[in-house]
Length: 267
Picture 1: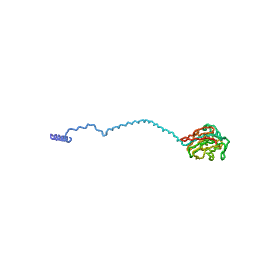
Picture 2: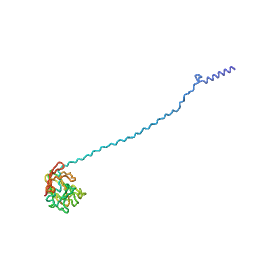
Picture 3: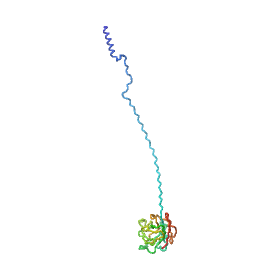
Picture 4: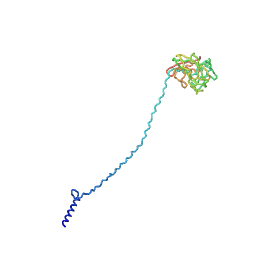
């Protein structure tokens, strides 16, 4: 009996040894009581960017442009001799009739020269009566031109006769293209000759004769400034006039650098 109990005790001890961990300690390993680390990390929230405030644009002031100053055109001085004759100044000459003087506010000096209605001299040369003339002293030899400030009632009242010294008479037909819209008392400057004329320096005589009725003549210009075109009533009379209706005496002064004198007298 005792032998059985002994064997059983030995067997029980061996069984107990077999259940112990290697190293042979019967002290139980304490359980791990640490908090288990979760497999997934807690997501960190990404902060939302605050919107950048939009700045209100400030209106830039509109630049004020500096106006470009307008240059005043400088007129080119006219170099040449200018001789001005008021046509009515010739009316008192002995052989002037039937030329007559008419007062009109649109004319230079308020008067102009004309022939009465019904008069006609369209022959090959002008009659002896109805001629006016004047002399001028030309300073320079070469090309010159003679112009007149004229008007006409129609194409049947638009011509005179003109002669330089003892040259042939020429018909002065007013250039209607230059004042066709001005029939009546409209005035225009017109070349008395078809072309310029050649003349030596010295004294020269210009003669005007009537050809058609009511061919109005206000003023005359003799000049060697070939590019010059008169405007308005032209320059002041500067030709010495004797025997005319409005006798006057003056020294002919040109626009530019030249001076000259002239004399008006009947034939």
